[in-house]
Image 1 (tube, rainbow, N blue to C red):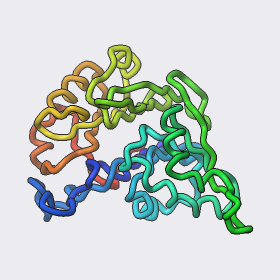
Image 2 (image 1 turned 45 degrees about the horizontal axis):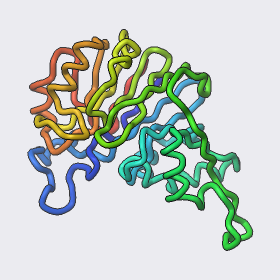
Image 3 (image 1 turned 135 degrees about the vertical axis):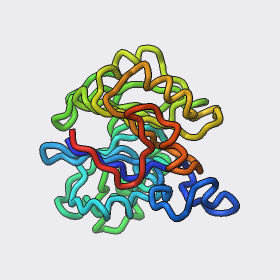
Image 4 (image 1 turned 180 degrees about the vertical axis):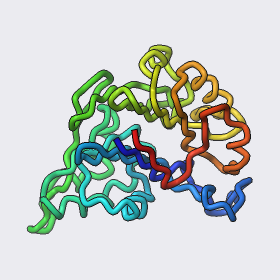
Length: 256
């Protein structure tokens, strides 16, 4: 299983527009340039994308893949879904719908925003074929394109996000501020956990570093990578990380 961290940044990316800019990040370190959070999982010829934010086109151009078999959606904040329409060219090759998977609330919200991706309208051009399909997933274990996939719920402040565990080896947890107790047993004995760590200070919707480190200490994966990083310098984050915990950077890859 190959995992590519396409982006590891917060909702506005680093550098950000306006006065935020680079924040405390050293602009001369390329690992501080952070696109919006997304991950690609590849195994046995299948390509599974988690989230499709506004940077997804450029992120996937760098991977040189020719197909997407499925897209898993953690939640519907714009930094995680606003690039869904950019995936249309993957439909052009084999004319096969790209399935989008999310919980009930997510698929309803995605349809409201992107109905043209799923339905042909009376005003649609005659040649138009909807390139995607919407599919509901629920908490639990499923066979997903050959992966043993566990889907678990996370608290993201005033909403929920989904976390995903693949083949009992790798889990992905972004946009989470409270981890339900039942998830800790599920996440035990991982080879790799990519988990959110936004910044030093607490946030009402995102885990800060000390909280994330507490979770990691309980789960004890072989390696942990921080994602959804804010305007904090890569070298600084590396200096405060416990053993076998590292800040992520765009383009980071793992083979499990």
